Length: 320
Image 1 (cartoon, rainbow, N blue to C red):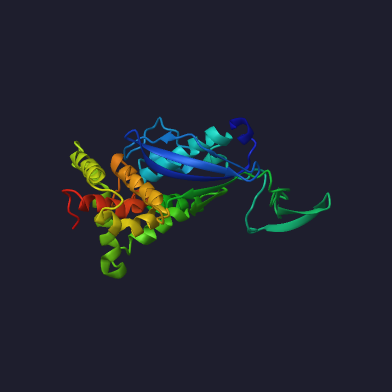
Image 2: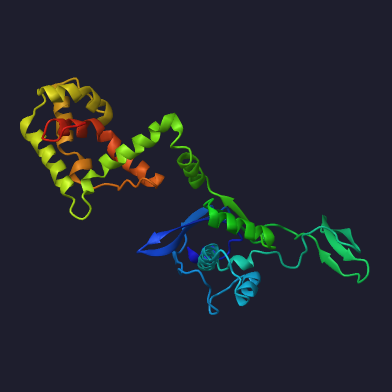
């Protein structure tokens, strides 16, 4: 895999910082249209701190100059770009500084310059010619297939925006795009307290509390034991003919996507309730500030909503 990616010139890399083993890490996935292939890039550990060391790999000359003057700002953004450069080195054999044009001069004409077009092998090749020195520099390469090009997808936060602005200010073939998933999450989180007079936020907060009962109190998980006891009480004291089961049966069948016409089908639903995975096993921890964890917890628990409510109502737990 690594050898085949060494020949790639155009690459799209989506990278995002996270915590792994209590350390700042950068994870990424790359895509190449030339290979029609995607792969995971090597995870990078980022060094914490607000200052840079003279022994670090300061891959951009402008950063090296600023570091020598002790004027490096936005060190967190630099750390991420440094990790991205190392990630690309491992993947395609070139860092961020290597995504540039060589032997050509892709810019507008300057003073004392003219653009001259020469026909070569049936193609029009443009050159920039200095009238005084007669020096000729090719304006664009013969083909774009061999030009190293990177599309870097980052989170649209302070660090990602800083990285985008940095690449706009230097002569590199790096296009920074803000990925849609994080953008969508931010678009939801910002107005969530005002949507429907805060009803959506209340639903998320209340649901998060209920879905996290399995692991509370933190450190002991005693509530999880009580939840399992409520499920055991339901199994021991009810049948498919019990009034409480009959009350919840239509909703259970709809949520489980199971038929309820015969006694055997109703027994299958009852058996499904007695083995609820959302009670018998610990699932995704729902964290209020992280939309990914809220969605993962909802996917695991919403299908068991009526079943959990019924179990609590049939035991010492009372659903408020």
